[in-house]
Length: 250
Image (cartoon, rainbow, N blue to C red; front, top):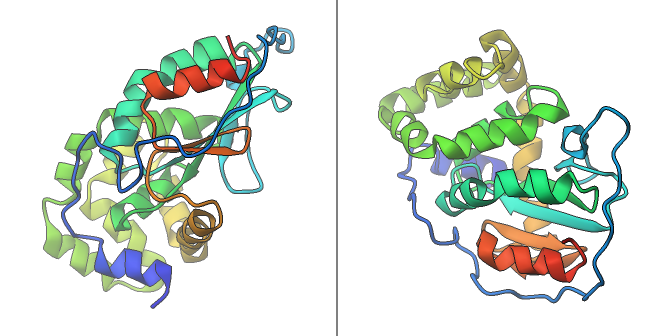
């Protein structure tokens, strides 16, 4: 069975644990960050902030910040992971205002998919422009307990959605899980979300990239962080911030 079918068929309606511990990963740093002197702030283009600059990377990650930032932070994250939600609560604002807007740090999020609901949400946060990915992910994490409770409240409806034709299946899942209303209230219309979710190949690609990159880069759980290519494992913000500072971000 392919990764895509395993995620969508076997785990769509399974209970999703919502805890603050790392989601199936090591909580101790695995790599090292080269120590650097403090790096001076790099000015953004006139009238802009670096956090407003966003693009999609070759790894299908969504990065904000100076494209030439000397400190590159990558987070592998699951949108249904409680530890990722806790990290977002603790870190998203200070990362954006202090580190990304300095021009010294760029911040990329890549999805590691843990279950079928995770996969559907991952496609929906991609429905807008690149600039909307980080804010939408933050909104998902900020509302995660209520989202998961609603998503798992009616397993028969989720099962019925998975029996629909291929190009209707994930639209049905999003409707059954209450995700259409959630995203419509945040700028992704029902028509827009339906178009995204009807593209079955794009949904499958997210699952397959998650599996491939997790194996290639030794990502065993979420959140897993890389600083300048060094795999630091799963860290809280209090553990990650000193690593950014060691790399020269002050």
